[in-house]
Length: 604
Image 1 (cartoon, rainbow, N blue to C red):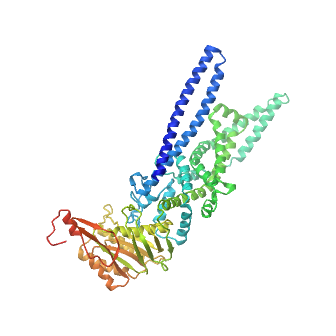
Image 2: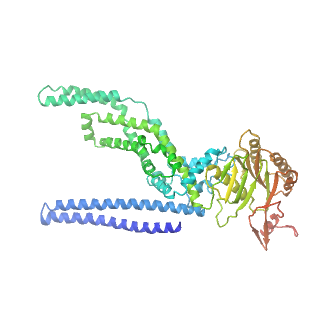
């Protein structure tokens, strides 16, 4: 990736230098040509200056044409270089170089905040390559879905697998959208919904056919009577028909007053879509059958977007004559030009209102899938999971990692749960890796249900409703303490377990009931975990309360795991490896002593 960036930087520098030479050449050519032409006028022959000016004009325009092509090439290289730098930032988790989060966080979601799915340092921000807001929203919805569907996940996974190796296809599609979007150039996402809403507001039933027919007949009559009058065959009857024509034209003209401005607005709104749809229409899909099926609505020869948008462009070209008012007045005096094109605008708008939602649906879906495919392409060591119903498979992961932890710091763990009703209680010291492991399990399940690859050598999982209680925060505006906010979250989880849903619950609880005193925390935790064990759920619970590990002696569905550390001098060493059994050590007093806090001798 870095070598590609280096090559692009060198190529861009060379093109920019060449563009600068073209700019100076154009200036020298214009100035020199004008001076030579003036010399021809005054010192050689009065007529010699005109041919010299013409030659200067021709050469200048040829050079300018090549210069425009070169500048377009520079713009493409700049965009491509920016894309490659973004790719490197995604590989290295350089959050400062990634685009700002496009979407707000939803605090009430059962696991969105807990698993860092959205926000400044989130999975969504890392994955999101969409140029449209709707595609970005769709990706967020896939990652945060609370009711995953096996068929939908399998369909998306098949498409992502097909798209992952098509890096050039994805990059060219992104460039087509980025180079033609002023929103993206300003650091914003293009919003297709705005265009759809505008179309619905401005597509009103307006029958211009009777008016156009009457004006066409009157225009033809004017021309015939004027011709006959010029040959002296009839008196100037055309004056009367022309007056009727003008009166009818002006009475009905008010109905079309806003249509031309709307045509310009529509043309500008669709300008960024033309190159995108044009690329998708002409791409050779070959054996990529899933991708071809997805873009099928754009490949219908009778209703291709490029054909419709080209027709709209011709309509706009036709109405640009109104900018030349004398010519506009003359043409409309002869034929009802305004009404011809007004009817065309109405027809194009009505067709687009029906067809555009389907086209945009294809583009939004493809952009969202491309985000997942790009993630798979950048992380070639990731694998695609096997998904089944929870009754057939619960959870098995080999060498599971967390995609938001840098590769050089990441430690992978294998972990499995074989039966519904099972629970893993994870103990360990502070900073040993308990919370990160819970998040790793949850994040990879979200990726699996979205249709993307997972950070594991192998992962098979059932279809679950995810619930998290990891990043609970109090809400001062709602008047909730931290403890009460946690209680509410845990009550929601328990209600979800009892709800009649074909998908069991997969829960992730970090430091259960941390917001209350030790005695009540232990009593409440025991009762709560015993209520969950054996239900239609599975899950992981991390805790500092070593008393909770005794639950495994009372219930065979509860299993103990732990993370450990070693003290070397004044340093704590963590290996972040998950092991079976309860934690044999604690480190709170050690950390306090290292920080210089008073700790009784012999403790810790």
